[in-house]
Amino acid sequence: MSKAWCSALPGGVRLAVQITANAKKTEVIGVLDDALKLKLHAQPIEGKANEALIRYLADTLDVPRSAITLTHGQTNKRKLLEIVSARLTPEDVARRLGLGGAN
Image 1 (cartoon, one colour):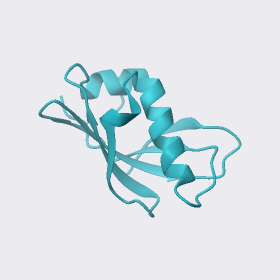
Image 2 (cartoon, rainbow, N blue to C red):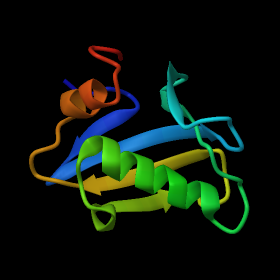
Image 3 (cartoon, helix red, strand yellow):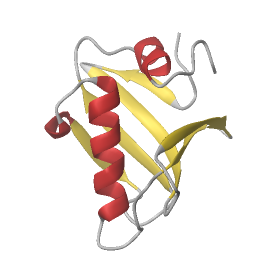
Image 4 (cartoon, rainbow, N blue to C red):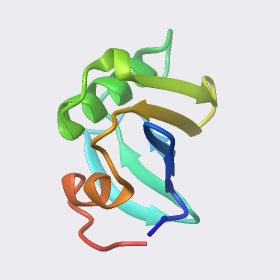
């Protein structure tokens, strides 16, 4: 079952995220307007927030950082990421991010 914010790709998944940088801590807020909403404990300068986002997702989803590519939104709050992992499904992503069966 595909989720609007997380869809299956051949050999991986695509995530639509919306970030809020400069937060007290990095955490998942939930799903809002077809995007996964995240707070990041990083400043939105010189790519620091993008790095923090990739590091957080790699750790949480148990994939190497090199498996995650930021495909759209390098300088926007809304971003699209592709994660190459044959064993990762949208359901796995939701579960690992603590969203259970959230759509």
